[in-house]
Length: 363
Image (cartoon, rainbow, N blue to C red; front, top):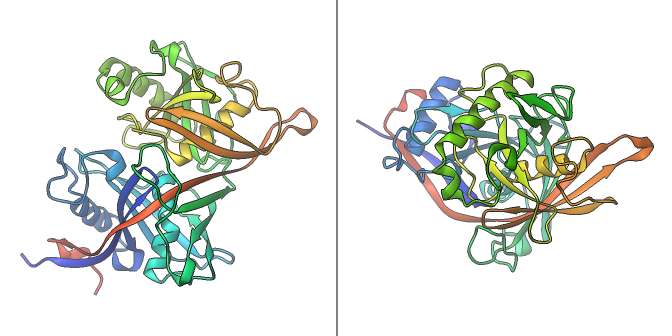
């Protein structure tokens, strides 16, 4: 069978990686698009042996970019989470780690011009509507990937990519607390259903019988824990207004515990059917908001923060994530204003990926 070639760039963004496409090179029809992306990543096989995926949810992610027609926005970023062992594509969430690579990829593709030693790229996350400004190092008119910034979960160092998130509250639901409560009780467990950058259901690790300091492998081996969390998540998704989320990766799950280091809290982030090896960028913002907001499951557990802006430190399985937050407690009310992180990205490969079913391709 004749194969069809699709141009792509392959980048590591933060602690995830995947192909970045020009949206114009892919089918418009959603079903055809899903078929192409599943073939590209090799979905349906635990090793993704017939595609570019890496056998893990953090390596079966896809970014699709296009010039934005919205005033003041440079690039529209459409994200797809391709399943590993199932033939399934979820377009509901976004991904903050893959977002780290959007600015560099847009510049590499020529979707955005370089403007100086640093280039600011304003990005609209199509899946959630969030607006993000990426600051990319572009000395000499080219994207630079060499630098001295290290992030936990990635070997070596690289050039910084700054991300400033705006309009992150109510990313999918329109409200910080979609249920109207800072705490809900589901099947006897207190949870916070919160929507900041990423809708999440957050609970205290101790309430689910773990310490919250377990390794990724230890957690992934705990089938009873995942069964319990999924039952809670399904009900949380219904209460948050998302309907049946059994085939959706949102809301994500966070389990929190007191930090044993100098961090503000320890967290384990679930995607939701596997443990994240580090920490999601969007998830870190949601966890930071939970730690700051009064009356949530983090109240009394997280180390308090008195002033804004501040840096929230979140311990994860292999290190610590730093989230710069701005918030207000004027008049006794709490308002989460913005969040920012500094991550790194690297262009790993570029060329063409081949698919054997060309029926969805544009001429």
